[in-house]
Image 1: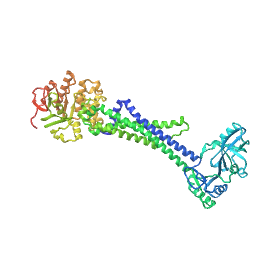
Image 2: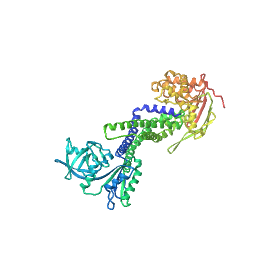
Image 3: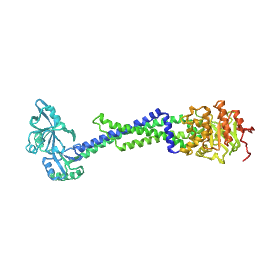
Image 4: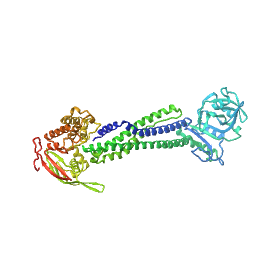
Length: 401
Length: 237
């Protein structure tokens, strides 16, 4: 019996019990569709995160005081380390040729107040370059200027949410707000930018870094933010930063450089593990679908015992019967797999329409994996019933009622 | 053509040994029409299954066209069932979902005959049993007699050396039975070797030879003389 004959015979046999065949496939359909959906969600999240990071710069480096370099973003103890200074940033800007923008930054919090409205807010002391580093665009007014920094002016740029909460729909430019009871003039409002580097840029205020030193009563700065032309230059840039800052810090490497790449890889690792976990759980349902196929094939073998006896009596060999039942099981799992892939891909395509913030992406390997595993399921769970059918004694099978 | 020598068949039913055949010997020559008779439990069916290569003897020898069936493996037996032996059952055993013509084609599937040749051969043999006009019908749309004709066509489609029938008229009314017997006679006249297990005395009447089994032994082996019989034993080959 050639495989094509077996295929036709199997299709004929399956067509008799259409409802049963469909229900049997359903297990595989659900299993495959879920695997595809889970992978699509995971992959979508991965791409989303990677893109977000690239947007705010996989090319951004953060230099902080303290010896240990840690990729998890925790700030190590700074007790023995020399603190970073505004002049360190100036030196980097002048001499580290791989760096594009260099921003000395101070991060603190203060109570911001306008008229009778007030709230606590994150205050970032930065330089004009901060606008380019994070590609901030202005809703109104302009960002900080060099004069603002050098002259330690009491000016402030508001995040959009802060502006709305303090001023509502009214214009805020030129108005006075107080930060820790010191008066600042509003010179700009940025457009919404979302969360970058763990800060919600919509919900903070920028003041000149020199002004911030006065406000918080410190002589040093908290971190230096720097951007590299392209992520490929990050290693050279890091070396330059180390060389320049170590010299300024008495040949001590008492600072560390955080790159977005490290954080990103930690994050994508977590996403990958979660995706694998979810797909694994979905894979269990695929396995259950396979058991369903085995179950129905066993029933089918018993129902068709007499037919098997007859086929053997007219000359079917063991391997002919084996092939025929195996092909039936494989058709069930294969068609189930294909329908499952279609449903999974369609579902992944529809999710963003219903849940706008959930990105999905079906990688080709997931389709290939779903396809091969449904074939494998058919072979694996079809072999036992098919073997059972092929081993039937023809005489006993013929007498079976 | 068929040589049976001291054939025994012992079944193990739990702890009990059942001796279905206790040493049977006979020969059948090409062109014979042999009826096998005997009370139930006499070993007729066992003998027929052995002859049909569905089983192997426990001891003794079964030679079919010079082949020692007892030493063949499962695939070897399947080959003989497919090509050299045709089997007709009391209950027809047609596949209900296939048309008459497709049912006749089934053995050819396992002989590797495909496409047009397969259809042509099924056509021819269905025509030979006079059922060509009903070839497109499924078994449940056919009468018992018609179903048995389809089954006979199926048994003959690979041009076997011998046609075995197990109570072929047992499920038929007398008219249909008569038709089937006439068909057997006709087939025998045109050269088909026939072995029919039957209770029906009118079937036995038409046979050229009657083997009577009793308790697993051959009790009687007699020639029947009547004008319509074309199968005359030719003596030892």
